Image (tube, rainbow, N blue to C red; front, side, top):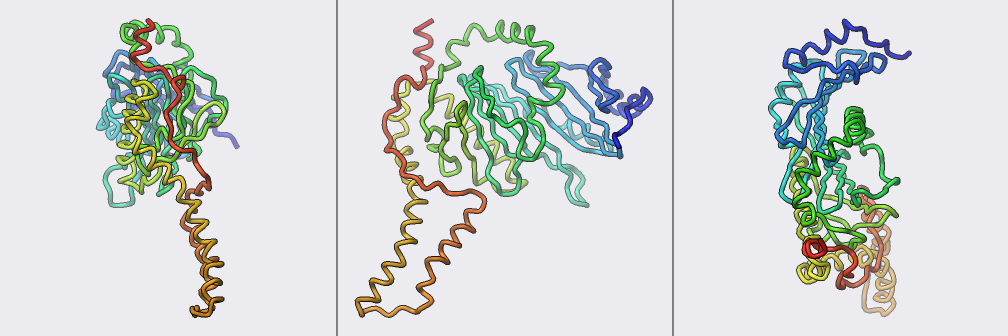
Length: 372
């Protein structure tokens, strides 16, 4: 049976905690049938950012409250909570600055989306857990889905901004919508697209030529050179897919993921600011370490398979005596490998040797400046 639509008195009563804090209901963007209440946009710490609060009213005492930050370049950050006491959720929201959700630097902008998770009984505050990040850096968009939780790896997507990527997922691993698919984000970014773009153009046109790169391709070890937590990129036809692993469990998972994402953004900005040839020169040793790491699954598999014939060879010569159970070591090791790799399936491959990146993969900032 569908939930009954909200009445005018329901809206006034349920939204009173937000109205008492100065939020004004936007009746034109709200929907009684969908039990959805949206509030008028407010300013944030930057003229390029607007803040929207929304409320999905549940049929029970629990409601879904969101704080959505909208950047002029299209990035969206959301802070979500499911709470029965809206005052307590809003108090926690106010303790989290807008600058943590949307981080603006000279060369890039990163949007962090969080969810407030209730702690077990006895704890007084909710825990802030990172769900998704989206970075606008040097003409690329880096999307990291950390909503998998537990010790599971995070999913990474690299997209060329302004390009077509129809094969990107519309939801997070947790099943929730992407922040840019939030109802408030879709409606505001569509309705105010022209004015937003003109504002962003006025502010950034002076230095836009030196802040973006023209990217056509990326080496598969583009992020893997940062360390073992990053897996090689795989081209998916319209974007690149990667994996960020070794994040651990909460509460250490969120700060760990934040640091890895910021390191990756800085690395991408620095790499694309230089010519492709310098990428190989600067990271020559790191690329060879990635090559060795990519060979390890195949080497391990071959080593396990080689144990059986080697054991038989030693016994057949007559100078070795092996316990009969030792012959079962190979299948036991294979089972052990399967168990240890349950969270991430290793790739059996013979990677190509590290070599200089072709000059047509991207254009550096210096090349862009010279062409203007």
